[in-house]
Length: 219
Image (cartoon, rainbow, N blue to C red; front, side, top):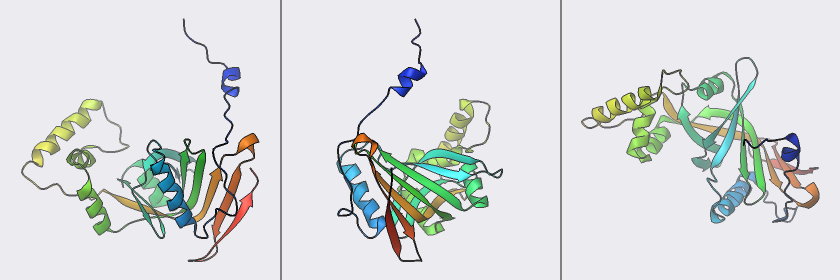
């Protein structure tokens, strides 16, 4: 017998948030430092993949597009991740520099929303990170024509074997179509789940190249 999923079952899914609080006495003046503090707590709490983040970009027709990517660096001015420049998201970020990130750490009943502008990091930085990746991941970056239609999985496997053989006699170098991006935030919102849906929300907004202001938002 197939179990039927009803809207009543979905609507009845509820969880009250009572683990932590987040008020004015907890806030650091720099949201990047606040993020690092929360991120360290997520690591210490053994959150499953704490660096997993939703990346939202804008397609050429103005429609939003979203997927999960992995945070690979935090700089003073932004958040770094890596991907194929020719992928759908790479093409979208090339056309529209506005992007958003979302971190959700359910084990801590927290989320962080980030909006800002995206740009490529330097080739030197991309080269250094690529060299640190496992060999299989390096080969995979060459083997996958990311976002392009393929006839079947065997295309990927054949490409992988081809490049694996090639790189037995040739050093693996970073593909020119693969590298890093940084999202420089213009706003960062910290959300802490609280009881009775009276969550704590604080929005940081950038006033100039250095300064931030913050305000509490109603949940």
